[in-house]
Image (cartoon, rainbow, N blue to C red; front, top):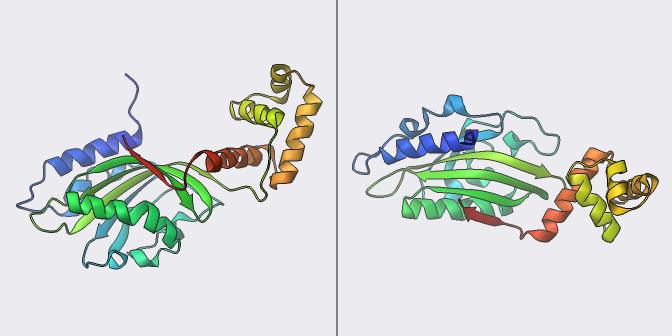
Length: 233
């Protein structure tokens, strides 16, 4: 059997604790999440949202454990500060990817596990997410969310129109092929491949091949996906 991912392990334990809770004796949030804190990987964030008011922008968010990885693209701690949800700078991200789903979870009092693909400050991002609202005979007092980042791609500085040869090079590059292997695959010289890659770097504002690859993937993602796509696993 394939090994469970950290997110799968944490989700299962959160669900087990949530299922064992009783709506007639509403559990404290810590009773649900205390068993997973030490299992969180550097790519995971565990967040508690207190539902104290009818206005979702006044709900209080607190990071139980935040992401442990560093990124030059986005400071996640600054993006998601402790305090009211209204303090999050990227309002569009919250309106599209966070608040509506949280309201649904609160109304239904049923967990949601999903993959979210959206944009944050123009970056294409994707992450796994589980949301659980307190079981309560009236209104839940809290929501727990746990997320694990999958990818974060910066948008190209310039729009690149790729011809068929460029598209073939991009596909093989993403698959890990070298310039020599790409050349043999599409029947051109390695120098032609290198020239086209340099031209793409210049057109998209990439500093190196690794950044170009990320930009090309973001470029493709932006053309193949809507601004927000969520699905239940």
